[in-house]
Length: 235
Image (tube, rainbow, N blue to C red; front, side):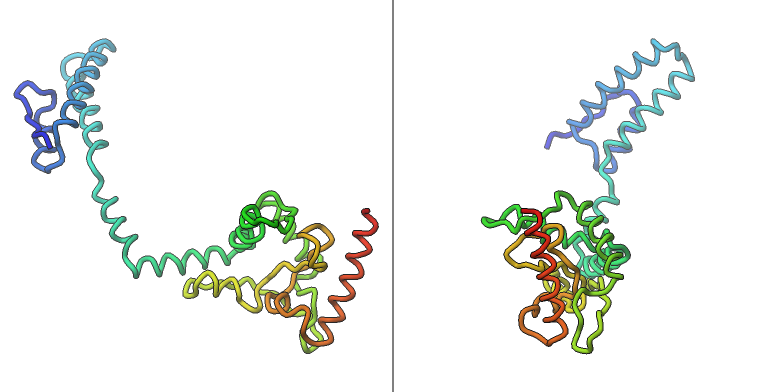
């Protein structure tokens, strides 16, 4: 690296020497500073600044230029902190806590699974949502329609509430397969994620839809009949 040599006639020589003692002045920065300082000096004269006013504003702008070019110690500190395992763990827990606070935050992973991943499949599932906002609005509408309960009954014959729980202490896969979390189920498996063919249920109910107790089987058959009529009507 070229050595920065501050000349006797350099503009704001004292500021340059201060930067040099800090070890943050090289030949490249010095050359750029000289060009900037000469142009700023001429511009201030053209604007009518003379004597003390000219000296004051010249030092003001030159000092600001040197501060802006100085590497930030805070950036280096933040980088060390971001790479710290303890900080990463705390950041992950905080991230999931903020995402759980609202339905919009919870749709982040759902959108990746149902829409973005669908674009990369050889045989797409035909998702009707084009954006994450459309998915979010549909979820609000469907939750209101179902009263925040699952479309299928559990073993006790009750329509259970669905949760939106994700923990920063778990892996993304473990969070995704939370048994009681909200899940979107296709009523007719051969159709896509289309209007009239989707309900909300718990993830475990979605997984075991075809091989469980009588109550859920009755609900599934009932919804399948309804969905079939809707699709036949639209033909």
